[in-house]
Length: 534
Image (cartoon, rainbow, N blue to C red; front, side, top):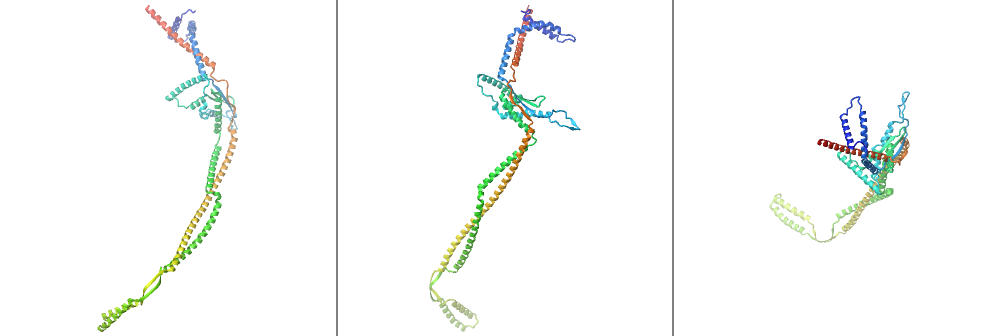
């Protein structure tokens, strides 16, 4: 079919290649067009022959890569765009500010305003809030039902296992941070989120690429809700409503706690019947005071009577003489005899001694002593006496006992009256204290109620003001809600198959070329050895 054999063509190609490598430098003014035209014929034939001979290699490589591409497409699946549009009232276009009479005119639209909104929409914190609100269960795919779905899930799990293994290895090497499943989802969604301002408009386009369009719509809706809250919070100039909200809530809690304490105190101390209890206690205290005065007067009278009776008892002997018999006093008779004897002795002394001598003086003293003793002794002395109980003393003792018993009863009654009066006084003091404390707690409740009413009114005013100001703060409108585009964004089946075919053809061509070059080298080496032997 061709004039050249395959080995000859390969050998010519190798010789030409070696010649080019030896003379690859071209002098100025010298052209290589002659060599190209000289090699064009044989080399073109060689290339055509090469592809014809390796046509099955090329076909097998193309089919293999296309099959792998189809398998990859089945694993990955189509990806859809979920699009939403926001219209911003930005005002005039940004431009160098004109001046009138040296005064600068402020424009209402700035490039920074658009960039601020884009930064808020693409902030990682906002995406973290959205993913956290949805939860990990939202991103978990449903269990497969059909056999094809099970195969796809198996391949997808295998791909994820390989990816997780690579990620784990990078984490151990310190090349990647350790991420949780939700953090991985946040990163994937942030990479698939695209926010840009449509050229020459005030419309901002938000695009989220996702394999599940229904989930993508929910995610984008949550993103817009979170963005709205963040937008208002960012553009609010003060926290007046938040302040009054917190203060109103605090005052409400304080008022409820104070009312609960007041009610508990009123129930515990029976404040509602305090007036009646106080009146009854006052009446009882007055009556007890009168009873105490009367009892103490009776007690003083009885004590006086008892003292008089005790004095009378002290004067009354325990027993009295009932009957008595008397006789002459023998002691007096003895004194008389002794006086007579002394008188006889005195006559003898007077005859023997002069008057004034010690003997006469002793005699006189003895006589006078006997006379005094005689005079002191009564003439009659009791011989037999009979004594009995003193009836007057007995009567006085009976009266004293009865009065003492009455006195003890009065004293106990006075003690009881004093104790009851003390209890009534304590009750009155407690009522006064309870009334004072209840009035103080009531004043505290009234004060807290006024404060709560003041803060509640201020909160309502702040809320109305904030609602009225939201029109100026929320300077955007949702032109197009999150809507999934039914046409898949990618991957394109034609592009993937064409790329796979080209890649398979290139890979097969490279393998075939390497194989033919090795074959040519072997043929050349064998020829040289055959020539050397010859």
